[in-house]
Image 1 (cartoon, each protein chain N blue to C red):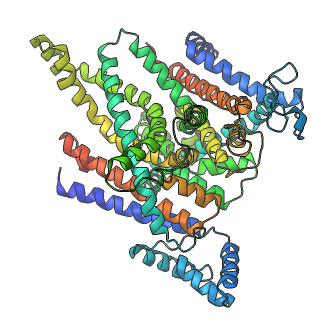
Image 2: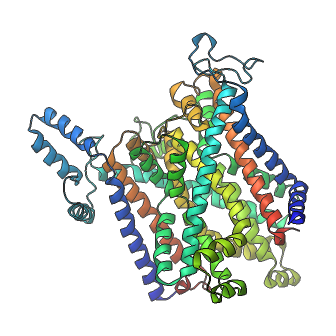
Length: 333
Length: 284
């Protein structure tokens, strides 16, 4: 991997980040101005100050004044971003958007990464098995499973799991990321409690993504099985187990690693639905809250950070893939 | 031409999955077009008739307000299919035009258009849809479809562009250019027919994606304009009536879910079959 290739990729990512900032800026400009007027009126009566004073304080808090010319607004917004300031939340008053994101992001990353790792590991092993034992019943079963799970959207699977395991049997909690009785920190009761609360969201993602992983892996493994070096190895008398573990699985896995990032982005985009079904306090849950209650600054901040996460994941996957597979040259992208 | 049509039907008929998918889709379309003409849905609240079990009068029982669940599904199917149809149409037009212009023109136009496309591919679409739905009040299926399509054309545009890059250097296109034909003519009369099979499959997939997204938005309460849309029924079952706390409400929750799942599966089967019928290289 050459340095110029890496730099080029990073530059493209930075431009995408800038465009994502512009996008969130223009989305926020669609805000009805009267939302801020109404807030200013409430603020003025609460604090006992004049309307103008309240308006000025609010525009400073959310770093946005609809009465300024558009380029001044853009400068103010980008300036705020450079200082890492996303403004104050409009519904959770006196809480900054930064704080909300700092609290929410770890939960989303936790659920997404655990489910991604579990479903990836199960999926590639199933897929490799399917490629090896093509005449068995395993292949049709998994193909049907994959079609069924891709027909039912993942949030619907979530609702069904919630109804069955939380309401009907009462085995799992219905909301939150942990119980208030445990003390947050690196201790066993807390970790167990977090896993217990995260179980159903994780299960939802795993159930709905295993099938696709298995099918993609099977396709890739079947291709690898046709390569000359596999035939040569099997003629040499390499055992079937070694062939599968050391020869096929590793090579067939490579193209799937790039799809990890795509899948991460896809899951992150779908997280508002899953997290709202389980009332799980991650990024998606707050996007749901912000849109339902029209909290424009919070929406803008969450969208920006979500986009940044996806851009970063894509960049990381490109770089990792080039590192893993020397045949890929970054310049050709 | 007519022989091609016959061959097409034969391939579809021979492929069991594709054929069953086609039948199910046809049933849903029949339900959406003629259903509301055959029976009228009474949405007035009738508290005495709440949570009735399925019977001859109410095929799937009644909901939390004593309204017929089956008829709500029938009326809702019209809204759901309209969203799928219009959103797929808009997505196809946007995706084809942007992808084709980008691939055909090349140079700076191509760079700029692909940068925009990549931006749309990177920014996660569902959160953006949520925000747009919160800012704009969605009032009817056409507006809803347009918003959905505005954020789903990008993958198609990229695919169309790469198809175009291989098409544009074929002899028949070069001949057209030498003959001095106008670009729009070449795009729509020469290139479009060559991409029809590909676009047909994408039409089904776009409709499927739009329906999932619309149901998701409705479930979050962001597009509450039709009480019988399946997504709205799920939302009402989950949030307003305690359909998930009350076992009597299960049938009201499960029936839109079943319809949605069946419809999605039919789309997948049908588009797989279509791919096989229209692309002879896939036949084994």
